[in-house]
Image (cartoon, rainbow, N blue to C red; front, side, top):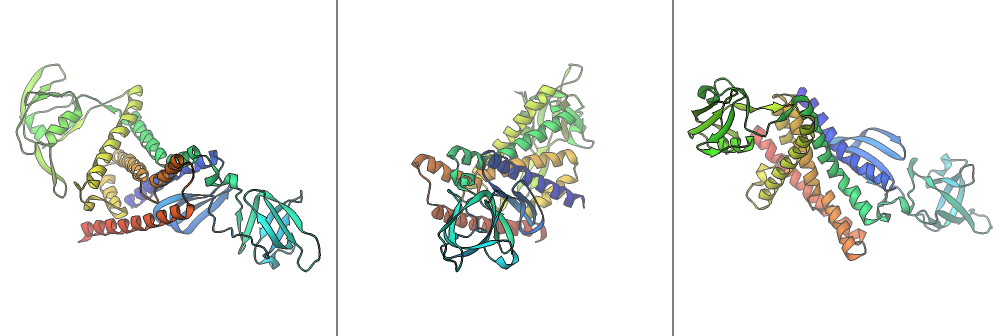
Length: 421
């Protein structure tokens, strides 16, 4: 049960922060954000505040912010179409009733001659069966379009995504991944404030009983300064050599807490961290120290190092050095989360930060349907000086989304095979 709660919390936090970035910058740019959704599929919960409907949906496979532009709820009002109009106190149209007009007895029914809900915000038409001149009605910029008794706020062109400058559109798309990196920095900073910051030097905090380190006589506060005569200045340099030397004898020079140096011989144990991948381990943990300034540096540096590691692995995947079997979908992530939750809250938060960075990076990959793919089209528009045909761009994103769904199915099937077969 703890794993289920942890997974829901983690998933909700990552998606919420990502979509919050899109929402904030959409509103800052003056775009009409119609919906802020966590999940896909049928609605489970929703409420409306400040023009935006906030929803939680059934399928936990992502989220989205739907910005006004191409709105299927608002059909084109063509000449001859009979609609009902309701007015505010100033005599301006605030509701456009498309069908079921009998349910709105106070609505004024007209036959449409012309309607422009994008620019002039006017509707012209005639009273049905009346020989009267052409009538013109001004439409409120926040008027509601009522279709099948569902109200949708209209979006004048200046509230639509396409109306904004290249810079504002690019920022709105980039804001989601950016917020994932911000979340990772915040998590690492909080962890640094709570537990301290790991020392740059290879100083030992704790030695696990019964491990090669304990058998060799390593103690807390020992600093490893040389391995096989090679100077060691960082914890990363120390762990790198140990991990690359399973069951190989290493000669280590230690500086004890009292400043004395001592030579020890240690043989790292061979440990399988995943199928086909083995490393050496000796059973020690890193020393932490309290430092306010160092904590913020740690937050940024840890995020940078994790980003670099994920990008390296992604490049190896693209170049074929890693198999697609190495990818994990929701099932695989849930299984990994289950294992990490057992090791403690700190490791769970580090895992959350790493997944947040991973989500940010993946969304910036220039593939159709992802934020990175949409940024490519915005960039092409900046270079060409004119936008790509919306229909062509839409088709590319639809195909890209279908391929991504196919990839998700393959990855999920691999996850299931690893777990149950």
